[in-house]
Image (cartoon, rainbow, N blue to C red; front, side, top):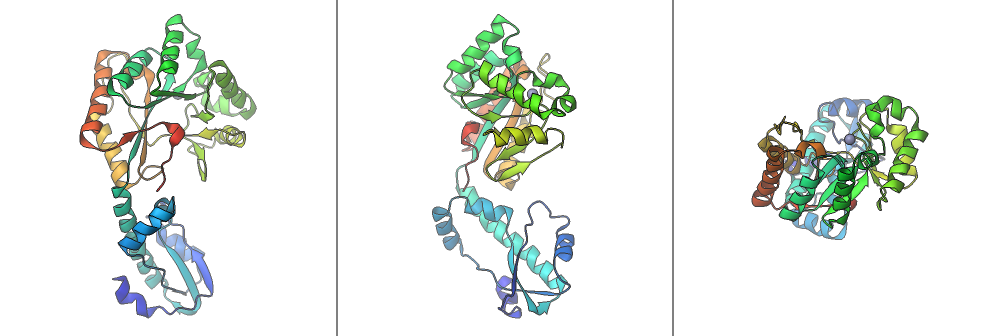
Length: 329
Ligand SMILES: [Zn+2]
């Protein structure tokens, strides 16, 4: 298709416009229309064969992720204009073409899943600890210091996490914002100090944080905020050397009854869809959020075990530590 329309466009770019089209399938035309002159001409971009793409991937870490996010790069020739309609048609086709070949390459590469458990230590933590050992999978726990000081049992469960080489402990604040999130985040300095206190109290080794009540990501070149309240605290943490991670998929189970709000199969399918559609925050990396208190009783624990079994038996996903997030290709 591209080869057929290629001769229409003349080379001779005067201005280069890179159109970042990530996550705007719906209003793509609008954003082009508003950012470009009435008529423009596009230049051909280098069309990589699958072999060339494979070679580029080997030599340039992160190339596929970059092209997945920003598939269309169009040098614009304002001297020999073409119509907006043609440009939009071209952009749509080009975007699909680049993404299809990037997807094919990503599908050949390793895939990573991160099981993260929030709010521990709580009743449920010791079961999570045992399951990670029994299944021999790496897991991630985002801890709340106040909970560790509530009872001897929880203190012991915290120690079990720390002694388990398959568990990595991260920071989820000392007070969990007292579950009054807007109030907590309205004072970023005291919120920041709450995370610091947690780090000291729990002797946490990694500067890795998940914000209570917020799905905020700030790390490397990524900054994604779900609710504005929380952003200043997250920025302050990031400025001081922390990385902040949210989640792609959440699983809820009623802790007391063990009844899942979403059945195990639905969560399994969602993880697979995120992986296949490359719709997670980072392609080939999917972060699952759960909470320690979901696994208080046998029923919940069996669900967790069977999700792990299903993933291990039907996929080649690797269970990873958040410290290693993301694996970029
Ligand atoms: Zn939490």
